[in-house]
Length: 346
Image 1 (cartoon, one colour):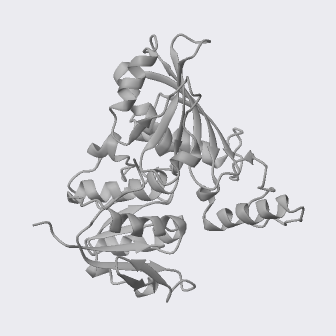
Image 2 (cartoon, one colour):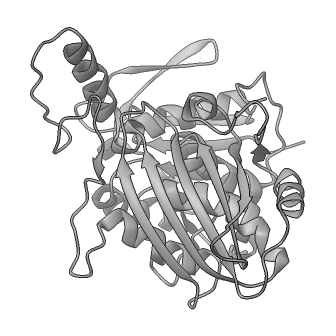
Image 3 (cartoon, one colour):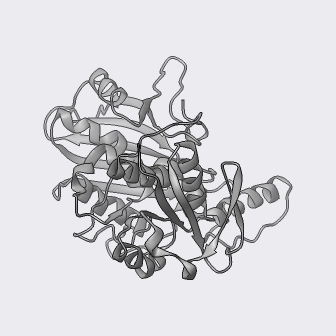
């Protein structure tokens, strides 16, 4: 019989934390306790779980010794301050923030790609950036065709990536725009409705913003390939949830055929090929929203480079780009057997 687990979700009232709680219920985890923690501001709120509600407690009230798995969905400062307390009392921690991603001692994991980096002694695993996860889910399967030399990617990132407040700002500013009213943006640095702009992270001396730098560095670590070249351009677009990415993959030798790429992607777990040229139907964020799978299509030879393949993908930033990936890491490490209830994915 599968062991009943005591699980803590830190940041349970945020956009990612809410998804984690829903996934634990939907995927049928056998639980002894589900402990929900948040800030002092969110303490006392109730989150629906199964046929009852669980009260969110302030993180300062955490019972570390009662936890087998701690899933962090809070910012980096919270993860750095509080995760050691859970680890020291024997918990396995998965952190969604950027706090530990580039720490050489901490595995950065996408379960379908590099789960082997987790060892029996691992107590802390970092969840990659959402854009990195979505991109590598459709790039990693192509390594079977030879060494990948370079990845060029342009991202179209939804409001969900900036949190619940940004999602609210997109909704409110759009309503104001269509009714001819003024709206003063407060969460993001530029007007959001009917607009797009460079990702709202600082620009470094090299001209790349913080989000782009994460994609570069994390790709090298996850693929264990310090020589791979990655050139990203990250853009915030007025989409509620699900990021999209235009990707060109350049191989050291000749590129595989379109048919070979379609076959490889269709066989890879967590990826769904949506590539109907006749109907001009390809991945869209409206279809990817709420889906566990990353959708991929527009698969074609790069006519400017015989060594390259181009494609387009969409993935739910809150699911595979964050909460689902974290939950899957814990499932793999603990051998959790799923009893899936009807999912939103196909």
